[in-house]
Length: 601
Image (cartoon, rainbow, N blue to C red):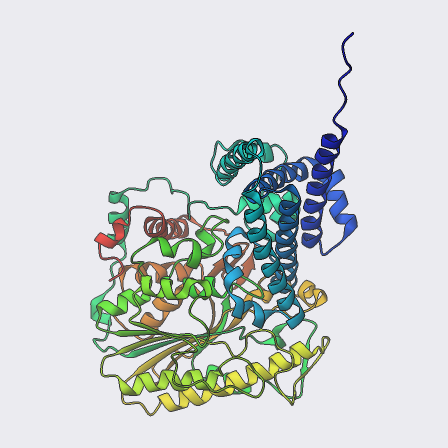
């Protein structure tokens, strides 16, 4: 008589426990995406998008298997996995709260930016982050030590699972490849929304959106791309040398952190005076207006990339979320305003009163060709205002002024300020500005911040009037601060939440006094045209495009004085836009034929 095989209930229990654990972890990530609404998270998982939810669970299961096999313990692997997902979930919730966009795979590189994290979140959250990090390190060390004593059979099983899951994760990393089976499975039900990553994550789940933003080519190849096509384009945009001056004025770029005008927002009434009074006294007398920022509440590095290179984020694939970390480091040299001016005999200096590692700026600036990079440690002027943890704008301008007065060669100085960076509370003893409609401490403190910033800018520009050398300044705010309530954001949906202030200033007062709306990638070409400097072929192309499409980002196109959600181009405009797209592809993804044609010199 055959013996009846017993069902291994212990193993079955473990399997069911792991499955339940993975489902709960994916639900947690979905909760952070849905503002901790259990109703929305459960409907997404078990009613609206069940297929996509369980595809995400499959990826998490593979990841859990990889961690557990690496550590040699299911329990410790589960604990480490939990700590990791809690950290990612909290970071996602905070980013959604302050910037209205989710965590991207590339953001995980910022985990070592302790100074930035400390400054951006409250002390309890920062301590929690350090605790999670320390616990994770301890778990790894303890588990690896214990795993050495595993029996031979379990070691072989561990190695087998580790190799299998490693291979699967490598395959998952190619999610954006056309023939990737996981991507094809998602495509059965997924509606990808590349122009809005917020909606992309909502519609496909946290895991779907996260996978969608894994590495991808910066741009898809435009039809007809070739060396001959690029050569034809470069010949079409040749600047007229007779109209330009041979002078080499100093050029100063100032990207002012979160500098914007709160009085432009619907639902707010500013009381106690005008925090931007000093700024307006200057802007009203020179070329100025509003600049379209790609993001609300963040995205500084992307605006800086656009301003220095002349390339638009709108043309990139949606997954190219941060060129400073995902694209530029791949190059030894990358054409920019810096390299153009360097070839014309300028000394180029970047100044950022913070640390050098943010967004890989140290590496990026080297790739752009800056001669030197001054940070909070190497700047001579480091004064702060009251309890503000950041170096003041006044001190930063003093640093710029010293370079302008102590150097013989023409200067290009690029300043990225920090004074008006979040957090905003508990900086100043007096807050004279109030806001009817949203009178929060953060907003009142922010208004005092931009008042100080305005005054510092005005004083700096007045000092420039006394310089013997002609000096041109481009000043702009990178984005609005992420401090406004959902109600205020709802009232200002669209371009209004993305428009900051900008101005161009000439200490010889030779610029046109007019108001305009623009995008940061036009700054270099616009300044050279306004200042009557010798333009490059690429700048000539940008000037042609600016006349037809003065400002644009994904879902926001400014044409003929009106904002549209979609771009509408006639045949002439389409030709210029496609030429611009072709050149940007050539430099960022293609063979860089345009460099051989000296299009950026």
